[in-house]
Amino acid sequence: MSVTTLNGLEQEWMVLQNNIEALERSCLWIKLSAFALFVVTAMFSFSAWMIAGLLASLCLQEAIVRTSQARLGIRIVRIESHLQSQDACGLSFQLHTEWQNDRPGWAGLLMDYLTQALRPTVAFPYAVLMAFSFALTWGPPPY
Image (tube, helix red, strand yellow):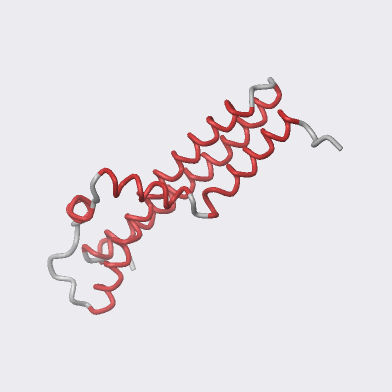
């Protein structure tokens, strides 16, 4: 099926799917940056607290990206539902309207960010790298 034969919702679905994949790549770059930052800061003997703070900021940045990605996912599921039922009149190109209508207040937004940050796929590399930074600073336990 060529792009010219797609209806509005099908085109929107394709754009959203591409954006979701682009955000996924962004998250992988953030993870890679966290690992590189850990290596560099460990080589220069930064304090564990400084390393942990830098890693936590990257973790939060990934959580923000994941929150955007999750919201795009909500829209794409809605589109898929309408495409399946073929009752799609008037629903295309409403991403920003729905995003604004569904956006929580500042407390809800912070809770969304925290929820995304605590997901195992987001938190895993950061928690491990932070643990390594403290292990490097404090050394092995005394026996």
